[in-house]
Length: 402
Image (cartoon, rainbow, N blue to C red):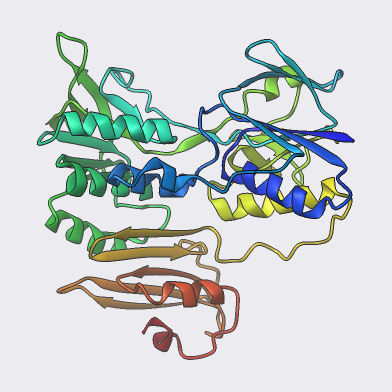
């Protein structure tokens, strides 16, 4: 029996194990999963719900209850010994493998500014991170919080702190507008107006210059690049992640220019027995931070491991897709709304008041095929349009928004 070792126990690793077990009808693989966190796999996409007060137990993924699968939480890998086909844990244990899948995910970025490590500063990535933010906010109810990053996570964090934990949030976004990767300026302006009306304070087009500390060594404020000073004792960093690819160096595995284990279209590294999937993988140097491509990679690797590498349908042109659901407004982006191929047709629909509604549809030059879309205030259109990206439209575009 062969030994499959999986490093990391997030959503992508969980899907990989399920896919291998569902395909391995001859029981050729015994699987060991090493998870650095003390928890079993959980729905990372739903961490904002935990910040709002949903019990952590409701985020757990289905248990891998299988005699051929062993999961060890609280166990971190320190090195890969490729000649010996072993992984060395931080405790010094050596674990052999026949195939190794790296699903180590990403680590949250802290801006390289003075004070970013002070007590009162938190990153947002794991269940423990969110639990810590929640407890800090409860202790500071009625106070202020600075959220660094005006993307999806930053806005979800601001809403949860404001509505559910009684903390006044100040969102700091260095880009000219909110959710710069997903929205155009028109949609972002409507969203900003609506958010400001709910009491969330927005500082766009300016970055964080420093986190300021007092005599006790804890956070007392944040200074922005325009010299604005916000008095606060709670700062949350939600501005991006970098891949967890630290095992590459000693194992002489190549990395992409922007990090991540460099893999081919099959998610295989130059070592034929080592694969990488999810946030830590760089396919020909390109990375993705969304779950759908990670699941796609997991399925592809599972097929190879069981000796049935059937060609998978290509990932939908709608990916990456993003949905921000806040009480009173819903924002969605699918495909690449910033790509405007020559001859592409852009259709926009705007209704600014009383509840903002905006749609931007990017079509092919013949206006038959949907390439990408931005939606604000069209909650029923997302599912329909998401399934149509890359497909010929069955009806005039404006009819699909109703």
